[in-house]
Image (cartoon, rainbow, N blue to C red; front, side, top):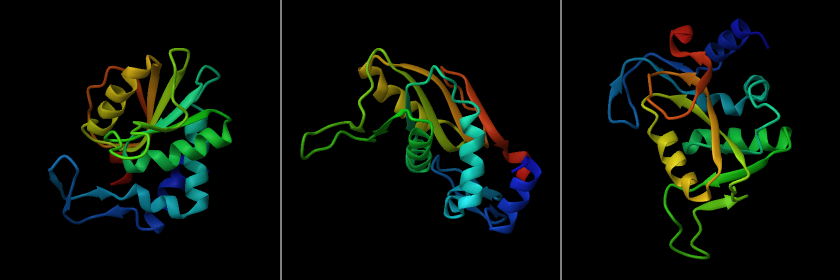
Length: 167
């Protein structure tokens, strides 16, 4: 799907919201991109997966997601591109084996890609980076579906769409 077709489709399914919305950061915005809604439409989800897939590279051995919006993307990408999948928990489990990671646990030999739905301040991505440090894996880069803000992160970030393209 071409970029302009994707944007048109996002508008058709109601991803663009022109009303006040409270963000995770605590800020309220007048324009919101409810990108998780797009996950319910296979044509749009497939288009996003294809676009991110172009940015994976042969060097990536493991894919993880940041926050609630990144985990489904990471699982689909890992399956489609035959990479390890790791779900990083926000907090260590207090029951069972008390693990921080579900699925694959990266090692020092892994090169990890982090995916997320929307980048604003980057707090959820920073949390994943901090959690992965204990594995000694190398975090290669981040790919987000929509870049909304300017986050200062210690690794390269690329995006599929910029918020200004959706207004």
